[in-house]
View 1 (spheres, rainbow, N blue to C red):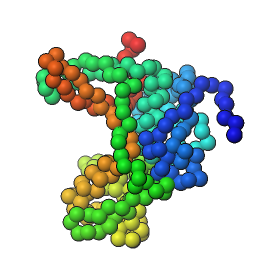
View 2: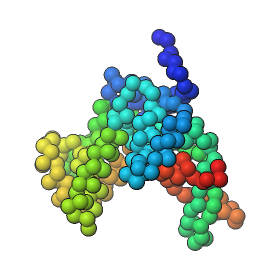
View 3: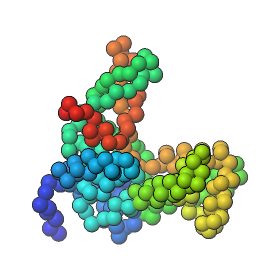
Length: 253
């Protein structure tokens, strides 16, 4: 089979999921995806004040750099994060200057993160079944939940739902319940959407937390943290956030 060639530089990226979460007929099941190097076109996307204001600038960038014949909406969030990280590395190199508040010193600290050292999160891929479907038993009542890991398309739909709900009630947050409604596929075998929505709204907080913690523990992803070493040798783990500043950290560069 002849390897496909493009009129622009590309890179083949290994996905954190290993492709084991996608249907076998999907190109993503190979565990790899081809992405393009950022061009002036992608810089235009990053510089768009309209996209930044709408909060979708990184979504549009993500969709732009995928060149394989795959639907970006099908890609799970952990794999998407790996693609965005690789795009930053290929586009602007490994050095990422940041400023963070230190819990140890109580001050802002400037540091330079080496993004090439970000590791892929270790998860048990033996539980993946090429159909993005998992089970969890709630600790309080033994109900069996069937759920999926969220995709890029799910995230877009979730944000649309949250925006609509907040227009009706600006003083409330709908983040957790909306995400659970999109993740849960059935409760004790009942996959009726209205029944799932009702169940989510009445879900005990300890069950919600247990389910969300389990989902986080099995989700393939990149571990977006770095370890800062203080002058006295003590270390502090700091999260690396992805936003517009991830690509435009400083006008100096």
